[in-house]
Length: 434
RNA sequence: GUGGCCUUAGCUCAACCGGCAGAGCAUCGGAUUGUGGCUCCGAAGGUUACGGGUUCAAGCCCCGUAGGCCACCCCA
Image 1: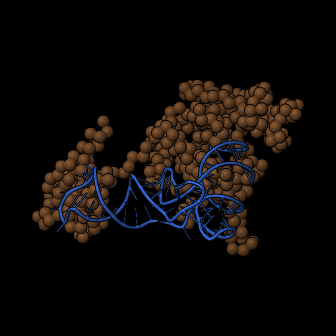
Image 2: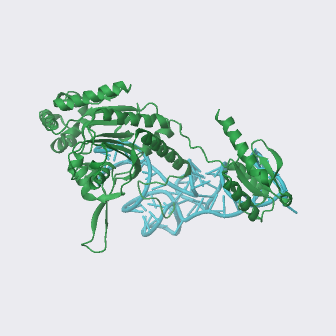
Image 3: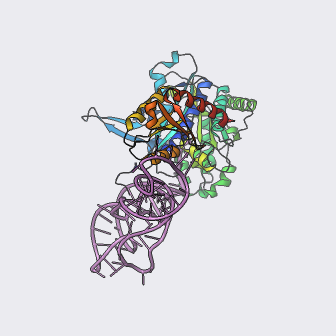
């Protein structure tokens, strides 16, 4: 075992896997741009209070998973920060700080980057993980709720996960949720004797969580528990029906999930999560999001509605690997590798390769001083289409152009080399793509 | 934060009852001093995760720590 390892719950993204991530990020950027979302980046850490206030002080994310950092010279200067456990609170903080309410509304933003939670690591669960995030601030919906869900499904199919299903629910708002929670509490209190120990303590702290329980003994109790849909106020009910109508118009068939609740306090009304059929465990959500109509105000802004989602790129990559890589990372292949007959003469190789790159070609020189056979072996292994062999004929202005795939070779004037390679590259593309 | 299983070369794994730490793949070199893929030969690669204990002797037994996986919890 090496002396130093990546910290617990983190990992290195090595070349093949890193390119999968880059392609996911590229797909995310393309989609978000086409849908009219502007890229934003916020600091990787915020004042702890931003999360305590925004995410909620009694949520697990803040209570036990916050990655706290402290820095500063003296005790007085020392500040309390936390690495971002999710992107929304920071983005909303930026919205308020920079007066984005004076921008054209709604403000549509996207961010892709690492998030941090100090949780016990497990497969698909890391202390540093990547999210593709999208937020719309200033539109009360419900049409935009449907649009954003459609955007997420478009992302999943764009990267090769065609069977992802969205689970939706409405969790009400300040007008109706309190009454529902009270009804739920009453229901479970009346059956407290039947509750497992853990669930009994939950009943006191957060009754909504009982609906999430995977304890088998809870299943029948949950099945006959009052549902939020029966308790939605008129405004929330209309909003939810509006969402469903818009989804139907987009041919998206959501799975209604009356027990879906979210772990962060800021959510109101629309809540949704994405799963693949057969992988619907709690730790297997590919993404999730919802509406947060009270958050901007909580963070010191004017009352402003908002909605967004986050997609876990680590889990998407995992899912892709499981279905044997629709996104198998295409290796970067050079058009040519420049090799030399004189093992010691790295000067000409570097010169020739630099000229070819100047002409726009993807190529590199073999700069080792190993013999020609080894250099060619390396070129072949790198997947190069051609090897440019620099030898004695260079004195007459020629090199050998070897087609590594065909095993053929011919002499070419150095002055024609770039043109020849570019033409071959273009032909190869057309032939290869068909 | 709680519990279970696990950790030997870069990777996948051997090593009898406690008795010289090994193989395949990968890497590098040679056969081939100007021609890749195949083949053959060779080299390098280890504080057996780390620290302690028991023993004549520990990869193996005991204790602790770190890390991994799984379940709980929770989210992405």
